[in-house]
Length: 66
Image (cartoon, rainbow, N blue to C red; front, top):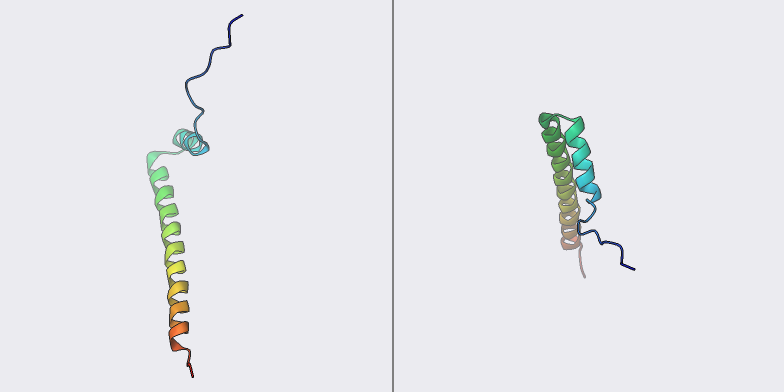
């Protein structure tokens, strides 16, 4: 009795599958615009995090210590 053959190829990741569907449904210009928008969202989140951290540092520095 022989063992069942083993698949050497891995299943694509969820992200890879989404990009494949995206490429079928959208033109390249729409894909680029969507990715640019998402990059902008991530950058805005990073700047907001930096602002919160800077405000925390300023608040600590301005506290009057006896």
